Length: 349
Ligand code: AVI
Image (cartoon, rainbow, N blue to C red; front, top):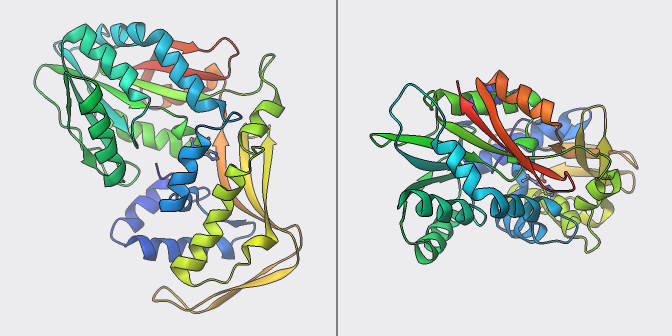
């Protein structure tokens, strides 16, 4: 998934970015982000080949509870989730569910839901949407090998930039999956826009399954949350710092990666984890001239940071109001016993 627009509106980026190549987009992002005060870099820059591999590693870390907790919720409640989605009410005729997944990646958790859909309705069409063709090929192979009864129709697209390529079959209703806390990497404004774009492709009675990470509570300490983004093995630190390596490689910048540190904080006012890259010394970094602009020098004071990611955490009320703003109504939600993570089923109004 490529969340864009840490501080810039999604619609502005959508209209501007559609016609430019990835390397131009990286160049533009670096020029704008590093010239801003405070300095920023958008989180979509994390996901080059090395970054995508590091993210896969993160999802297996003991501290990163999000992936395994969401998987455990699916394992415990797949039957109810699919039954509720199939029995949602809308004006169009009911029929089999088709599952579409935004930012599917390798779709490792989705298998639980697909297997249950096959159990309940005999077969299922699954449409994973992702920017990465390689990830979709892997997803497709895994699913076709392991879950008989699933027809996979991959769609290579960036749902944050383009209208969702929803291929509606006659007499079916759609269950859209937007899981893995991906929605948390958007600002509230952009998150509403992503969900509104999705809603525009659905019919009343179609459903959305949304995975959201939860705010600290009686059972979930701030320390648990912070550790998930600052693991002991340093994988998340490498993931964060890899952005600078990418700018050196793709743009010929001269970041001394070793003189930056991984910094994580919980911002309770904004209800988000923030990741930053902190300059450990006073230094200057050069960005060579490109088609997109002249050579630039960026000065860093010791302790100055580049803000690289927000990961918003939700209460159940916040989830409901985000969904309501995009014309969805909560049908039911599930969470793990420790209230670490929530999965919410909502119906398109
Ligand atoms: C992709 N996204 C949901 C992850 C998150 O938890 O916000 C990205 C991530 N950043 C650091 N660790 C994981």
